[in-house]
Length: 288
Image (cartoon, rainbow, N blue to C red; front, side, top):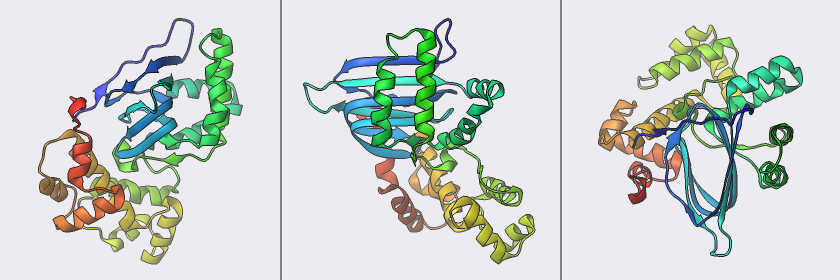
Protein backbone atom coordinates (compact mmCIF):
# COMPACT_ATOMS: atom_id res chain seq x y z
CA UNK A 1 0.00 0.00 0.00
CA UNK A 2 1.45 3.34 -1.07
CA UNK A 3 1.50 6.16 1.45
CA UNK A 4 -0.36 9.31 0.44
CA UNK A 5 1.51 12.59 0.11
CA UNK A 6 0.01 15.27 2.33
CA UNK A 7 0.40 19.02 1.81
CA UNK A 8 0.84 21.09 4.98
CA UNK A 9 0.30 24.85 4.89
CA UNK A 10 0.94 27.46 7.57
CA UNK A 11 -1.47 30.29 8.34
CA UNK A 12 -0.54 33.77 7.20
CA UNK A 13 1.80 35.40 9.68
CA UNK A 14 3.03 32.11 11.17
CA UNK A 15 6.14 30.10 10.33
CA UNK A 16 4.85 26.71 11.52
CA UNK A 17 1.47 25.01 11.83
CA UNK A 18 -0.74 24.03 14.75
CA UNK A 19 -3.86 21.90 14.35
CA UNK A 20 -6.36 20.42 16.78
CA UNK A 21 -9.30 18.07 16.49
CA UNK A 22 -11.71 17.32 19.32
CA UNK A 23 -14.55 14.94 20.13
CA UNK A 24 -13.53 12.13 17.78
CA UNK A 25 -14.89 8.65 18.41
CA UNK A 26 -12.23 7.12 16.13
CA UNK A 27 -9.30 8.00 13.90
CA UNK A 28 -9.34 6.22 10.54
CA UNK A 29 -6.30 4.58 9.00
CA UNK A 30 -4.68 7.31 6.85
CA UNK A 31 -1.20 6.15 5.79
CA UNK A 32 0.58 9.34 4.68
CA UNK A 33 3.81 11.32 4.67
CA UNK A 34 5.02 14.89 4.19
CA UNK A 35 8.35 16.79 4.25
CA UNK A 36 7.61 18.45 7.60
CA UNK A 37 8.38 17.19 11.08
CA UNK A 38 5.18 16.27 12.88
CA UNK A 39 4.64 16.24 16.63
CA UNK A 40 1.39 14.39 17.39
CA UNK A 41 -0.36 14.34 20.75
CA UNK A 42 -3.22 11.82 20.76
CA UNK A 43 -5.33 11.58 23.92
CA UNK A 44 -8.03 9.15 25.12
CA UNK A 45 -7.27 6.70 22.33
CA UNK A 46 -6.96 2.94 22.16
CA UNK A 47 -5.62 1.10 19.12
CA UNK A 48 -2.43 1.06 17.07
CA UNK A 49 0.17 3.52 15.81
CA UNK A 50 2.01 2.89 12.54
CA UNK A 51 5.34 4.72 12.13
CA UNK A 52 7.46 3.58 9.18
CA UNK A 53 7.77 -0.16 9.72
CA UNK A 54 6.84 0.10 13.41
CA UNK A 55 3.47 -1.09 14.71
CA UNK A 56 2.73 -0.41 18.35
CA UNK A 57 -0.14 -0.20 20.78
CA UNK A 58 -1.62 3.15 21.75
CA UNK A 59 -3.59 3.15 24.97
CA UNK A 60 -4.58 6.42 26.62
CA UNK A 61 -2.09 9.05 25.51
CA UNK A 62 0.57 9.07 22.80
CA UNK A 63 3.22 11.72 22.06
CA UNK A 64 5.24 10.98 18.91
CA UNK A 65 7.55 12.97 16.64
CA UNK A 66 7.95 11.84 13.03
CA UNK A 67 10.68 13.13 10.75
CA UNK A 68 10.41 14.35 7.16
CA UNK A 69 8.85 11.90 4.70
CA UNK A 70 8.42 9.11 7.26
CA UNK A 71 5.03 7.44 6.59
CA UNK A 72 2.77 7.26 9.63
CA UNK A 73 -0.79 7.00 10.90
CA UNK A 74 -2.90 6.05 13.90
CA UNK A 75 -5.88 3.68 13.81
CA UNK A 76 -7.59 4.13 17.17
CA UNK A 77 -10.96 4.38 18.90
CA UNK A 78 -12.00 6.31 21.99
CA UNK A 79 -11.10 4.52 25.22
CA UNK A 80 -14.67 5.12 26.46
CA UNK A 81 -17.86 6.77 25.27
CA UNK A 82 -17.44 9.61 27.75
CA UNK A 83 -13.77 10.17 26.87
CA UNK A 84 -13.54 11.12 23.20
CA UNK A 85 -10.28 11.32 21.29
CA UNK A 86 -8.47 14.66 21.21
CA UNK A 87 -5.69 15.30 18.70
CA UNK A 88 -3.09 18.08 18.72
CA UNK A 89 -0.58 18.29 15.87
CA UNK A 90 2.41 20.56 15.31
CA UNK A 91 4.19 20.72 11.94
CA UNK A 92 7.47 22.49 11.23
CA UNK A 93 10.19 22.25 8.60
CA UNK A 94 13.88 21.51 8.86
CA UNK A 95 14.57 24.88 7.25
CA UNK A 96 12.63 26.57 10.06
CA UNK A 97 14.89 24.97 12.66
CA UNK A 98 17.98 25.84 10.65
CA UNK A 99 16.93 29.50 10.51
CA UNK A 100 16.44 29.51 14.27
CA UNK A 101 19.90 28.05 14.74
CA UNK A 102 21.47 30.53 12.35
CA UNK A 103 19.95 33.43 14.28
CA UNK A 104 20.25 32.05 17.81
CA UNK A 105 23.04 29.52 18.53
CA UNK A 106 21.13 28.48 21.65
CA UNK A 107 18.97 26.34 19.36
CA UNK A 108 21.89 24.33 17.95
CA UNK A 109 21.18 21.30 20.19
CA UNK A 110 17.82 20.95 18.43
CA UNK A 111 19.51 20.00 15.17
CA UNK A 112 21.43 17.17 16.83
CA UNK A 113 18.32 16.02 18.67
CA UNK A 114 16.15 16.06 15.53
CA UNK A 115 18.63 13.83 13.71
CA UNK A 116 16.94 10.78 15.27
CA UNK A 117 13.41 11.87 14.32
CA UNK A 118 13.76 10.22 10.92
CA UNK A 119 12.95 6.95 12.67
CA UNK A 120 10.09 8.35 14.73
CA UNK A 121 10.38 9.11 18.44
CA UNK A 122 7.89 8.18 21.17
CA UNK A 123 8.23 10.35 24.24
CA UNK A 124 7.74 9.35 27.85
CA UNK A 125 4.52 9.78 29.81
CA UNK A 126 6.33 12.34 31.97
CA UNK A 127 7.15 14.44 28.91
CA UNK A 128 3.57 14.09 27.67
CA UNK A 129 2.21 15.47 30.94
CA UNK A 130 4.58 18.45 30.78
CA UNK A 131 3.66 19.11 27.15
CA UNK A 132 -0.13 18.92 27.56
CA UNK A 133 -0.68 22.29 29.29
CA UNK A 134 1.68 24.06 26.88
CA UNK A 135 -0.19 22.76 23.85
CA UNK A 136 -3.55 23.38 25.54
CA UNK A 137 -2.79 27.11 25.62
CA UNK A 138 -1.90 27.26 21.91
CA UNK A 139 -5.44 27.26 20.55
CA UNK A 140 -6.51 30.75 21.67
CA UNK A 141 -3.00 32.25 21.91
CA UNK A 142 -1.69 35.05 19.72
CA UNK A 143 0.85 34.01 17.07
CA UNK A 144 3.73 35.39 19.17
CA UNK A 145 2.58 33.63 22.34
CA UNK A 146 2.00 30.43 20.39
CA UNK A 147 5.56 30.60 19.10
CA UNK A 148 6.89 31.02 22.65
CA UNK A 149 4.86 27.99 23.72
CA UNK A 150 6.23 26.05 20.77
CA UNK A 151 9.82 26.78 21.81
CA UNK A 152 8.97 25.64 25.34
CA UNK A 153 7.58 22.41 23.91
CA UNK A 154 10.81 21.76 22.00
CA UNK A 155 12.86 22.51 25.11
CA UNK A 156 10.90 19.93 27.11
CA UNK A 157 11.21 17.30 24.39
CA UNK A 158 14.96 17.60 23.91
CA UNK A 159 15.51 16.81 27.60
CA UNK A 160 13.50 13.57 27.36
CA UNK A 161 14.84 10.14 26.39
CA UNK A 162 12.40 8.97 23.71
CA UNK A 163 12.15 5.53 22.16
CA UNK A 164 13.06 5.19 18.48
CA UNK A 165 10.30 3.42 16.58
CA UNK A 166 11.04 2.62 12.92
CA UNK A 167 14.14 0.98 11.48
CA UNK A 168 16.81 3.29 10.10
CA UNK A 169 16.61 1.45 6.78
CA UNK A 170 12.93 2.17 6.29
CA UNK A 171 13.23 5.92 6.71
CA UNK A 172 16.55 6.16 4.94
CA UNK A 173 18.09 7.90 7.92
CA UNK A 174 21.88 7.89 7.59
CA UNK A 175 24.15 6.96 10.45
CA UNK A 176 24.99 10.27 12.10
CA UNK A 177 27.04 8.90 14.97
CA UNK A 178 29.96 7.23 13.23
CA UNK A 179 33.28 8.70 12.30
CA UNK A 180 34.16 8.96 8.62
CA UNK A 181 35.63 5.47 8.22
CA UNK A 182 32.59 3.83 9.82
CA UNK A 183 30.30 6.06 7.76
CA UNK A 184 32.02 4.72 4.63
CA UNK A 185 31.13 1.21 5.78
CA UNK A 186 27.50 2.04 6.59
CA UNK A 187 27.09 3.77 3.23
CA UNK A 188 28.52 0.69 1.51
CA UNK A 189 26.19 -1.62 3.41
CA UNK A 190 23.19 0.56 2.56
CA UNK A 191 23.88 -0.09 -1.12
CA UNK A 192 25.13 -3.68 -0.92
CA UNK A 193 23.11 -5.20 1.94
CA UNK A 194 21.50 -7.71 -0.43
CA UNK A 195 24.92 -9.28 -1.12
CA UNK A 196 26.95 -11.64 1.08
CA UNK A 197 29.01 -9.53 3.47
CA UNK A 198 32.81 -9.89 3.33
CA UNK A 199 34.34 -8.57 6.57
CA UNK A 200 37.81 -8.35 5.03
CA UNK A 201 36.47 -6.15 2.23
CA UNK A 202 34.75 -3.90 4.77
CA UNK A 203 37.89 -3.70 6.89
CA UNK A 204 39.88 -2.61 3.85
CA UNK A 205 37.26 0.03 3.10
CA UNK A 206 37.61 1.39 6.65
CA UNK A 207 41.41 0.98 6.70
CA UNK A 208 41.14 -1.16 9.84
CA UNK A 209 41.76 -4.75 10.80
CA UNK A 210 38.69 -6.97 10.94
CA UNK A 211 38.73 -7.03 14.75
CA UNK A 212 39.18 -3.25 15.00
CA UNK A 213 36.40 -2.70 12.50
CA UNK A 214 33.98 -4.89 14.46
CA UNK A 215 34.76 -3.06 17.71
CA UNK A 216 34.52 0.41 16.14
CA UNK A 217 31.34 -0.46 14.24
CA UNK A 218 29.55 -1.59 17.39
CA UNK A 219 30.76 1.47 19.29
CA UNK A 220 29.39 3.89 16.70
CA UNK A 221 26.20 2.10 15.61
CA UNK A 222 25.39 0.12 18.78
CA UNK A 223 25.02 -3.01 16.63
CA UNK A 224 27.23 -5.68 15.15
CA UNK A 225 27.74 -5.66 11.39
CA UNK A 226 25.47 -8.68 10.98
CA UNK A 227 22.76 -7.04 13.12
CA UNK A 228 23.05 -3.83 11.09
CA UNK A 229 22.71 -5.72 7.81
CA UNK A 230 19.71 -7.61 9.17
CA UNK A 231 18.06 -4.28 10.06
CA UNK A 232 18.66 -3.00 6.54
CA UNK A 233 17.22 -6.15 5.00
CA UNK A 234 14.20 -6.31 7.31
CA UNK A 235 13.59 -2.59 6.89
CA UNK A 236 13.54 -2.93 3.11
CA UNK A 237 11.37 -6.04 3.34
CA UNK A 238 8.87 -4.07 5.46
CA UNK A 239 8.68 -1.36 2.80
CA UNK A 240 8.08 -4.00 0.12
CA UNK A 241 5.41 -5.74 2.19
CA UNK A 242 3.60 -2.42 2.65
CA UNK A 243 4.01 -0.99 -0.84
CA UNK A 244 3.85 -4.04 -3.12
CA UNK A 245 1.96 -7.27 -3.67
CA UNK A 246 5.08 -9.34 -4.35
CA UNK A 247 5.10 -12.86 -2.89
CA UNK A 248 6.88 -13.04 0.45
CA UNK A 249 9.42 -15.51 -0.94
CA UNK A 250 10.32 -13.02 -3.68
CA UNK A 251 10.72 -10.20 -1.16
CA UNK A 252 12.96 -12.41 0.99
CA UNK A 253 15.18 -13.21 -2.00
CA UNK A 254 15.29 -9.60 -3.21
CA UNK A 255 16.43 -8.36 0.20
CA UNK A 256 19.33 -10.80 0.47
CA UNK A 257 17.87 -13.93 2.03
CA UNK A 258 18.62 -17.22 0.31
CA UNK A 259 16.59 -19.18 2.85
CA UNK A 260 12.92 -18.32 3.40
CA UNK A 261 12.84 -19.93 6.86
CA UNK A 262 15.79 -17.79 7.95
CA UNK A 263 14.00 -14.68 6.67
CA UNK A 264 10.82 -15.61 8.54
CA UNK A 265 12.75 -16.19 11.78
CA UNK A 266 14.65 -12.90 11.55
CA UNK A 267 11.51 -10.99 10.63
CA UNK A 268 9.55 -12.37 13.59
CA UNK A 269 12.46 -11.68 15.94
CA UNK A 270 12.56 -8.07 14.73
CA UNK A 271 8.85 -7.28 14.42
CA UNK A 272 7.17 -9.74 16.75
CA UNK A 273 5.01 -11.13 13.93
CA UNK A 274 5.36 -13.01 10.66
CA UNK A 275 5.82 -11.19 7.32
CA UNK A 276 2.28 -12.19 6.36
CA UNK A 277 0.82 -10.81 9.59
CA UNK A 278 2.80 -7.60 9.11
CA UNK A 279 1.46 -7.17 5.58
CA UNK A 280 -2.10 -7.86 6.70
CA UNK A 281 -1.87 -5.21 9.42
CA UNK A 282 -1.19 -2.59 6.74
CA UNK A 283 -4.00 -3.78 4.49
CA UNK A 284 -6.88 -3.38 6.89
CA UNK A 285 -10.44 -3.26 5.50
CA UNK A 286 -10.63 0.45 6.40
CA UNK A 287 -7.25 1.26 4.88
CA UNK A 288 -8.56 1.39 1.33
